[in-house]
Length: 159
Image 1 (cartoon, one colour):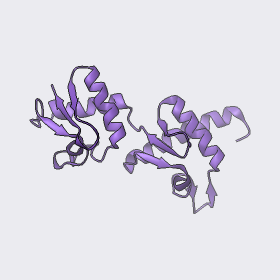
Image 2 (tube, one colour):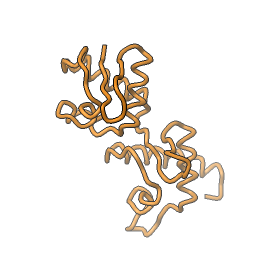
Image 3 (cartoon, helix red, strand yellow):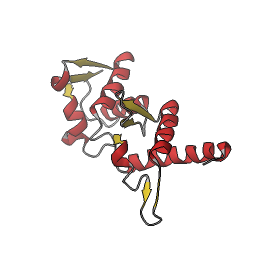
Image 4 (cartoon, rainbow, N blue to C red):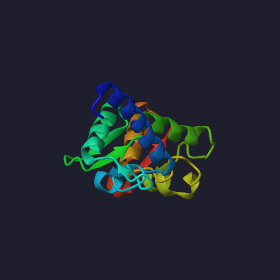
């Protein structure tokens, strides 16, 4: 879009669309080259697609707004925050406390939180490990959780 004002408006609409799409499809990461071929950026019915440079510009904007985070230096993959890590921290803690799951005081593996049967009906089921870790770090800072172990053997205790 050559007009800066129009592009600024369109960019915010596109950013909202990307977040809504990723939320609806539970997409935690986007590989830019692959995403450009999906309905997210390519309307086959109209034979219209987002150019890679425009997609990168959109994602740069989304990064400044906190909607995505670039993974690595290559600018090829993004982590999508259709909920910010702070929001995920709240959602997970509400599941522990309000949903009365009996998890308060017990230790859960990160796998149990992201893939376990107890979370199957939760919005955070299948959460990306990086996003989960960021959310748990927030709960640790709030003194609501403690993380144990490393890598594959990580666990968390909620208070």
